[in-house]
Image 1 (cartoon, rainbow, N blue to C red):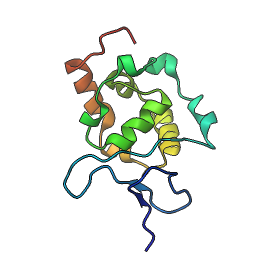
Image 2: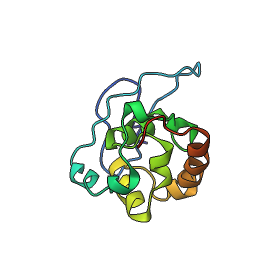
Image 3: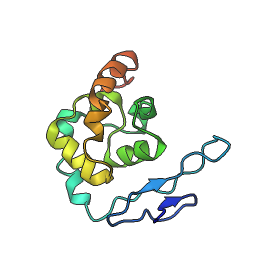
Length: 133
């Protein structure tokens, strides 16, 4: 059985194997997540419609981990793509979901199944960004 769980910084395995990164140690404490590099598909990021989604940055960030299905690793990847806040996630359309799924290389259908958009809509009302997006 192939085990692609990384507990030290390094490249994420590619191919047809399931990819996972350790985010918690046996004690339950968070461990350092490897540096995120999205390579080979960077051209897809340009297909995300940030005029509709809104621009984000670390100053306009929400804690995306508040959304079920988003952990530290996925949050960092989303930030790397330019998605930092609930408002941006609440504006996702089907074409955005396809692009993000391919860029993040995780299980297809997860964004819909975990209802990121619905969760983000509720959270964006409770935790609006403090500056205009």
